Amino acid sequence: MTLTHILYLHGFRSSPQSTKARTLGLRVAERLPEVHWWCPALPPSPKAAMEMLIAGIRNWPPESMAVVGSSLGGFYATVVAERCQCRAVLLNPAVEPARDLAKYIGEHTQWHNAEEKFYFRPEYVDELRAMQPGMLTQPERYFSIFAKGDEVLDWREMHARYAGCHIKLLEGSDHALSDFDNYSEEILEFLAQS
Image (cartoon, rainbow, N blue to C red; front, side, top):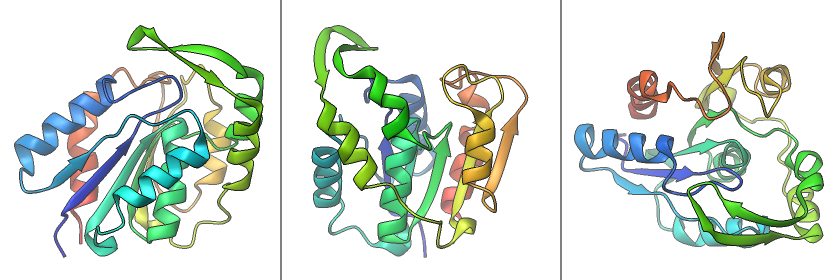
């Protein structure tokens, strides 16, 4: 089955304007123009974000769709991939976002637009806790890129959570994967496998 749809999920305080989202979106448009690309702006509420995503991909064929997620988007991508049984690529994914984001309750600005503010509410931590996926049903459907130089999340925790998946462990890099362009081809190759 050929790849027909890709869902890209950005991280906390990020947006569809992130370098990774734009880079991969351009690569998909160049290399796989027939593939439907969707990179939505996610609301701060995890419950609302998941409801929007599930509604948006309702008619996508699970056998030919894939999801890519970065940081908090990597957590969401795991939830979607487990629900749909589709391929997933995770970029420095959040493993325990309920724990990690509990200290970020309050008002924030978007990285890519300081004018755009949002409020991260205490109940959002509970929403994250409620959607925590269990063990991966098919680790071989996942390709994960972890950076030892991630200054936000612990790569060891990611590595333990996604053991058994296809893993690319970077010696350096950072949370944003500033060298992301080096991996976009490898990501597309993994996603295009049938």
